[in-house]
Image 1: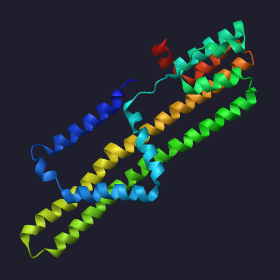
Image 2 (image 1 turned 180 degrees about the vertical axis):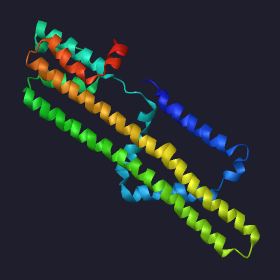
Image 3 (image 1 turned 30 degrees about the vertical axis):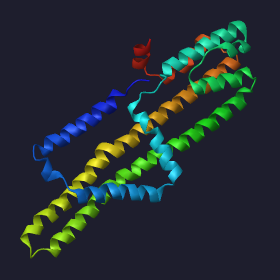
Image 4 (image 1 turned 45 degrees about the horizontal axis):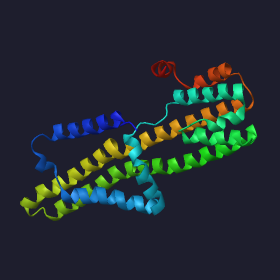
Length: 251
């Protein structure tokens, strides 16, 4: 399990940018009321849009933004080719003794050893991939919706501040705090949306795409093993899913 340094760098840079713009006058940029409107609005709108199980499932996978994927596609290809060489030499049943850590490849090899027809194997694995995409899509959409709601909640805070300002025009001392609340709510909404929730949604989408690539490699590879495709030809076919730069890095 490796830390995804890009996520850490992104969050640190975002914090430094905000702190750098604020300078030493942090108290001027703090408004409890603006925080309540923006964060509270995001939470409430999210609970209205999604059911509790979807929210809990999404919270559970948030750790993925800080962890790099366990298996690189090149590593999966290498494992498939090793299995292909073993099956070509000792038969498909010999794959039963192979230690495989990737759950997707392990499932496919189990189907292969059990004698599942190649067409049926692809259908079963495709169905697993489809349901995985549905689960991941819910999380991505959730953060995208929060990204849309962030600026909107900021605008709500701004409107509340403007109402308070207009209601107290006769009191000069109340105009400043009301205007600050109005502007800070907009700022909070923009920061939360563009520096946090939208990037998280995009990152989760990338991880979902990564797992789809693994599924496709596994399905093509295991079908090749079942059909007795030459391991060298099978490798040349699978490796096309990986960029040349990535092939060289993992070689």
